[in-house]
Image (tube, rainbow, N blue to C red; front, side, top):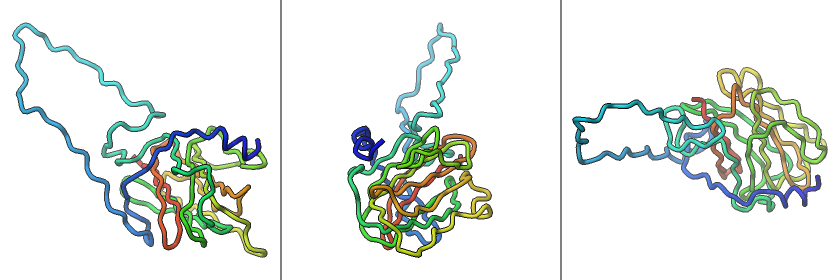
Length: 224
């Protein structure tokens, strides 16, 4: 499928991800998300002398639906639905030709960060896919994990001549995280850099943000 055809099918629904999360060791902390308030009634319930209590089942949210309210296991702002920046699929800032990747552990989530040498804010789309497919070639990409997050980010150019592809996180760096694999970005197809995150066990809620100085794309994945 051509890039033009792929752009025409991009959903126009945009989820703007707000709030900050604790950052990796060298990423600034935008501040914690506010804790949800719990509404309480000022009037005490009146017991009915003739009514007998009945048990009502509370439906559990589907694994493929976003969490309605944050819990101890799912931090505020995390969901499993697609996330797009407002201007995607338009091209964003000139990020350069490579995106080095690293992984960090945090309380309640694990973090994947791509860092770029260029400037400007990127546009992006992050979503779960059934099968990792390489942009451009259409080939299946072998990614370790039980669920797969596709990351598309722009504008990614051509790496400088003789530049080596950045290394992916090692097994020891991924140990103890819910991330089975994360790939560096090395060049793009028609300006779109692509990477995949292999997630352990299931589709887990995630959150996307960008940072500057240097330019970074951040994907946080809930561990609960």
